[in-house]
Length: 245
Figure 1 (spheres, rainbow, N blue to C red):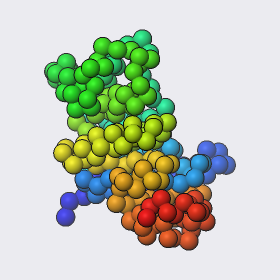
Figure 2 (cartoon, rainbow, N blue to C red):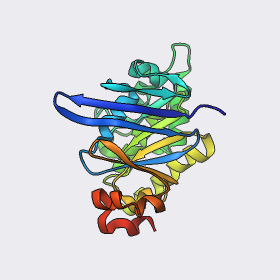
Figure 3 (tube, rainbow, N blue to C red):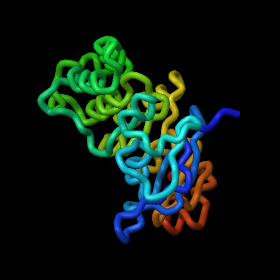
Figure 4 (cartoon, rainbow, N blue to C red):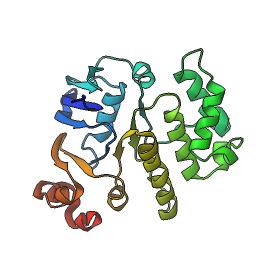
């Protein structure tokens, strides 16, 4: 049996006396789309920072396709195909869409790689060709989200961490972006872990949820089962259980 695409093993993170994460463990099988949910302050963003290498865990380990990457720097994880977006879109305001993707390509790809061809591929994949020569301020928030995902996708991407990529979008925009995200999984086999607060949206994307509360995992399973877990109802869902039904 092959190793999981991503394993979080007994991860803890302390900031002085503040416990941000405590003994967090779960794994993601290659090709899965998994949702990570929990109330504000549960530790979701901290966990993404640790998985992507921007923050070291106080204890525990991160494994990527069976290899321990706990101490690998972010750029090494990125080149190995462990990619992420950020909760706030981080585009260069004075650069066009094409130039924003090009910066990511030149930073992420080896020197011999044809980064210009990679930029074209990403623009086509994310349906951004018509916006390629516009500045971020000249395109919609939905398209800026696509640029952010496209920047994460340059080169090799095997596991993609999406941090609230659907927040702030209209229903129609969210539906369109969901379709494109799911196509990355369906057509390219990319494993996806997504943080999202809009539960009705998340339910359309995932077959499994990991729930964080008070810095640890309190539930891990199919959305329908999680929606009926008393711990999850008390900590997070309340009357919103119907969002998963």
